[in-house]
Image 1: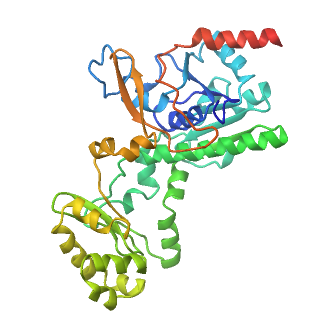
Image 2: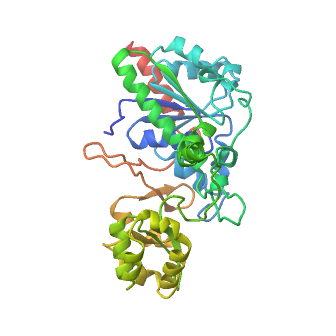
Image 3: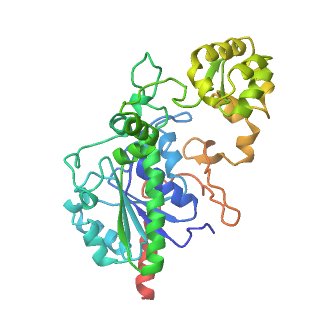
Length: 390
């Protein structure tokens, strides 16, 4: 029994942001019914596959963020399907969708309509630019993806090497961070409902979320009047806090505190640097020559040698590949790789686990992602049973 096992969530989302949000809820025990449009989520057919794309029900993209959900295929353009959905809304706790603003209203299934059926409903949307209900702008209705959000929100401008172009962060943070914030908003709304009995609308925009994520750039601009830009792996106000090339790879060192700086200098056999640059301000002022000293020391060691020399004394780590992650016993002990069945492949695959750990109700990915419309009879049958009980 997960912490949210009392909640029923109707998940109308697709691709990444919405499904990741509802995946978090499912991992924490919520009954998440993935209501899919005819043909299913757009990313069901996205690679990679284990072996045979024709034989396998879906690829890794869909599997990763839809585990532990139930699937029901509905066409909102069909009156019977629309009524089926509305009947499910009557006993649902949460509805989540990530369509463009106005899409649900075209089917007369917007928040106001659903709230009439269920005043305690928490209705949540994830959109590129938010919803007019919480602040109307000219951008609403425009399509958006992770790349758009990262570009507009300043993430790309401060990511990459100083002499290189603006660079997208590898993971889809425009989707994932927005989804996580949306999950927080849903849980806050559920808490409010527990106290008052009132449902409400929860709105999280991707552009807004990226502004929140780049908080450092925002306050830097406000304090200095200058627009921050790319600094590679360095930090604008902390030193050393950077990646360094080793004889066989790269490692990161975060020794901006005086205690860690002293330990780093001792490991380098350069106590003179500790004496000559005793304060954080000294080190920031002379960061370029000091970085060269550390880089020279790092280049003459393997990554393992560097980390071993600093481990327990200075925050340092290797820059790992996913091969390294799969080999790391820490990752396995923490349950961060989860095996699930891959339908059509006669094999298990591993997906990322849930980083939220709880002692009494630990989140637990509950099996593979669903086949399209796999749970129709189950879900609609439960609705009929509920109506009979009433």
